[in-house]
Image 1 (cartoon, rainbow, N blue to C red):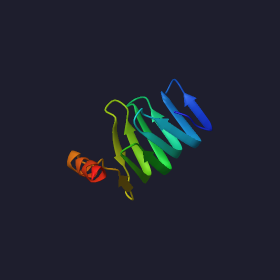
Image 2: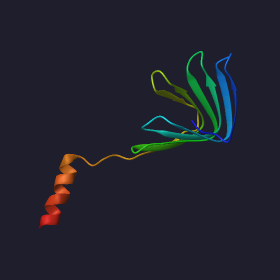
Image 3: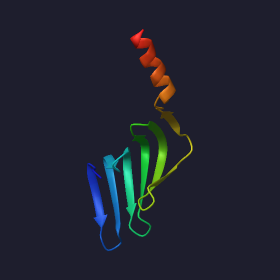
Length: 101
């Protein structure tokens, strides 16, 4: 997790980050204006023009709740998503056949 500004309260196991915030889960990059970490339930609540992107999709949402233990996401209303589907083997084979002709 990276951010321009932050406040960590170790006794409460909480953190608040703001400015340009980004979290990298390994496969997915999430950017937002603010993030609140809760150690009690190991969640990241990201708000403010949230952008989530990976090799397979990207989406925007007003807020996103990320559960670190299960790596599940809960998105708010107003989600706009784009999915990038890989071509099937049949489609790929058809393209190769057309190129060889």
